[in-house]
Image (cartoon, rainbow, N blue to C red):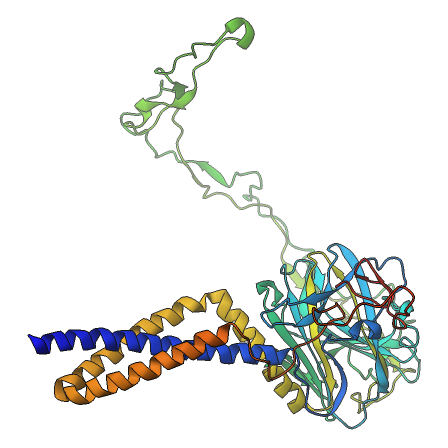
Length: 536
């Protein structure tokens, strides 16, 4: 009996201890996850960075709104828009409005014999309907005065997701100049991936252009399109050496019909074009029991006029119409008609057979002439220099956030940075969306049960050892619980400082007086971005 009491007590202690141990493990895992999320807000790409905009402290002064009045959409400083504490982004906030904003690339961007990587994050807080989320890398002339940025501003690259009407894709457009005619043409990548922003998660878009003229589009670090600048753009980079002569016209007497109606054919004498395609089946017989005199519907005999019905005001009352109950037990009611069948004598309209056309000359094509604008560019990756990054977009849904805009010459730098930022944030969002907390508790319960059973088996073999270990475990467990609970009231100093914003913080110095000068280029009106500002 005493042994049974000890076993029961051990059972409770071990179960309780196992569950608490697992809870502590989960608590520790959650702390690690929180630390990873906190680190996202201040992560930096390692090297070979050409342009990097995480929308942290001071970003408002670097970006400028278009002064064109049609771009009346408001940009916002989106704070804590993800599960990452202190994280900020650029939010396109006005539904049904046009937005335009741009920032210079310090030192410009000239692509020679290096790889070009363009990468950024997009989160559609309301999903997408008719919404653009692409960016443009503006050419040197367009980047000189960003206040004039509009739809006509010349760009070199346009890249990113777009959905509206029949368009539902990730754009990659390269503007290329014909060195002979000096005309600019948009070269569109073919068969690009579709838009996936409707799940309201943060997604990552990456464009890679390499010195061998290959390009690749990645979505969420997965390759979704790869191709060649020389083969997979429409229209192609290099035009044909010969083109159709626009002045050449088809001769009036040119016959390009390969076959004609046989002029000697005549319609057979017994061909009846007026014969109907379907006729009544003469062999059909009316089913026995068919009720010819019964209508399909009748007034409901059980219905009565409402007690407050006034015929002088409401008119004559009529009972509602119902299906005739007598027809339910009969093959049918009403006038019987035989079913129709296809007419064996039906031939339809007669047409003469086709015969070869003796005057046929073949398919006419205009003559080919030398293309006066022909050129050959075997290195289209050496694209026109760029000087600014801009978003010029229409949103119907509103509240689309952009973050961690990176331009680099290293694929590894972009990939590693994405793993340290986007991947951590995305996995946390997916876990929250799927309700991962319930799964964790189920795992805790199952693990606790298995651990308890294992310890009880050991107790049956060596009870004194298990009792001794239980005492030591209990002391250590209580100590850990005390430390864990005591630490919750005093948060530790984060290892990596979170993103900051221009909004005043509790420990900031006293605000400047009206006489003090604000930073040059930053004008905040009601929290909105002015020509160089953002709503906080």
